[in-house]
Image 1 (cartoon, rainbow over the protein chains, first blue to last red):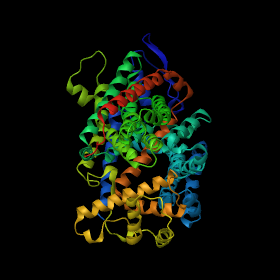
Image 2 (cartoon, each protein chain N blue to C red):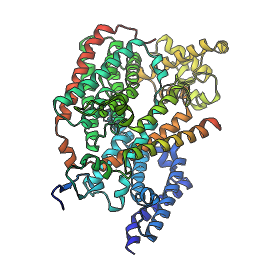
Image 3 (tube, chains in turn yellow, brown):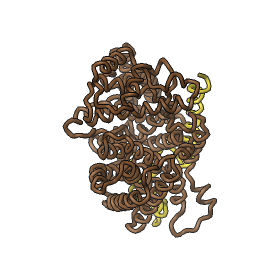
Length: 68
Length: 542
């Protein structure tokens, strides 16, 4: 372990409990957020949510408005 | 062998869901569903439990037959499956059992308490979902198999926020008086900036300040939930905000009517004040009814102001997203703030908001897809039994305490068997619609007067009039379905986020958020009190 690295405990509740070794300069807030998500980045999470919702909306419109 | 053991809970949940679905399919649950008033969702219960049950079983079998992999299918489906199924079961239990039971329980307690505890404490699926998650995580802890699934909560919550956009429309603002829009807009934005300023003074995290600003400024719980992912609020901060808003609202609900009466406010003035100063929609309605239970004008004005405030949500989301994008002490370009830092999922919320404003889901003038249809239609008639009840009441002079206009509306209901305009005016749509709506308002007044015990009506008569009023209130099927999706996404997301709230995380947030909430809430209530007394006379609507 180099001098620049230290053990940082990230408190994320039971959902992502654990400790890890990382650089002191690491963005712990960002890491904490990623530890609570299945997605590797915020952007991926947002885009997937957006696509899912647009598909849902299209299907809802199709079955409740356009096809009836 | 150990893999099969690990997957056993998921397998058991899947089999239980299948059994529940099959029992529901036989119709055995119908009496209970009727008691809980969930019988209309029985088809959904069957479909959802059978599909989720089958997926859980198949997923558990695949998981037990192979080593955990790193493919997308493993990361996004197989590994989180156990947690997803657990949260879904909890969401089903809350939507189909806990929430309806809470309604029945609070209805039974109403004669003792004088109010519905369900409405006052806002014990709907949002609060119940968070509570269920908090209780599970702080008692038994999150089961090992559910860990990865809980990590889907924020993603699903974001989907709920996107769907929320379908419930708002710019066209609704046009219906409201310019007066109320300016008044409410001033207080919404004023409160948001006040909380942001207080957050700066008390040196609170940006995430906490942002979520509290939205909650205190706009409409309480839904604003908090919508803004939480925008400002990257932690689960505990969100729970803190909701707790602060609801507690403050409960105090307001009791204090507002007393102050309003002492100050000699008119029904319109009190409605405007309650709609501006109290945050939660149900609490606004409760305060308006406590001030004046008979004249529903107070309630209507309060609701108009409340709706106006809720309509500011998309604007506040944009304001807070831009504010959060700006980092302290750094001068960032417009491009960095709006394009690079702007949360992508909010674009989804705005797309649905734009689609709704264009009238894609229901005519843009229909608030949240709801509209009143007083045209002739067999389906809007009261039932023959209800007609018989009303006719008998009419002949036995049971409506003696009614005003002439209310009596005219009841007489017409008995004659036409539904709320409608005059038959002779049926070709003059405008006049027909106007008369029909006026009759509906009078009938709502009859129910309000009966509730306030100003007149005595039998429960059957009240229920018949109530049903007639309900029959002319229609909802767009598209908006209803989109709202259903939103509710399920929120229920799932909030249970999952509740599971991330530990006792430690709550104590870490400290007491300053409550101080900020109370200071901003009292400032808003006091200022709006004087402004309403000064500016609002009697006419606030177009």
